[in-house]
Amino acid sequence: MKPQPECAACVLRRAVFEANLVDPSKAMEVVKGVLSILCEKFDENKPSIKVWTEVHKKVYEILGTDDPYRELKRRSNDIALEMFPLALEYYEKSEDKLRAAELLAIAGNVLDFGVSIHSPEEFRVKFKKILDEGLYHDDTDLLRKYLKGHVVYLTDNCGEIVFDKILIREIKKYVDKITLLVRGKPILSDATREDAVYVGIDKEVDELRDTGIFAVGIDIDLISEELKELLYSADLIIAKGMGNYESLSETDLRPVAYLLRTKCEPVARDIGVPKDVNIVKLYL
Image (cartoon, rainbow, N blue to C red; front, top):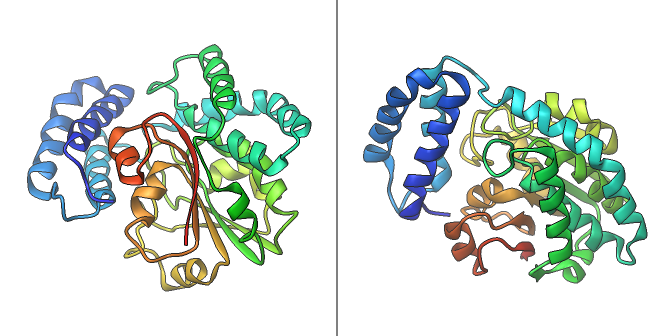
């Protein structure tokens, strides 16, 4: 996916949020740093994740931290673990287990404290609302045909990964092997190897891998040849969240199933669906 005009304001707001998490006195320096990168790099012909990665690298350098979201990520994981029994009950009572597990995995994406969620209670309300909405775009029946062999599952945010466990358990009924791929280094609120182990999702899969790099989404140009071969040899890639969509939609990797909630207009437009809907979309 290429950047769109409103992306500039969005990434700037995110950078200010990160500054306020760590050291509000450096917020103006952060803004200036981000603006300098946007003026030089923000281009409609350049993949968006290339720019966002450079922006966050600069912000983290200015703030002197390798993970401004550390406490929020831990809280997200803890709240999701508290709610896991309720999610499991929803899954077990559903007639279509795969569709229910997909929806739970997508609903977990709203657990983003300080950005869209400010309390556990607010998350519980939004979580239920998303489940009630169901899937706006639903390729589940087509997806079933591609659940075989080796599946690579690309995670997104902390907290969200707790609910991914249910979907992974369901997928295991169909496939021979599941490899879980997390971020190689902390970036945004995305899950790393440490987070995967903390919530126990590492025990649900056959193999746990990380990208080995600092990048938004999966930067196919920067990952190792070994990891690239893993992705291209997979029978199916399941990619969670908008960051993975922004990065992989620029590649020829297929088949890829994107499971996400369209939380911004640019991503929604690029996919061809409204904003704030839940989708399971398979690209072949």
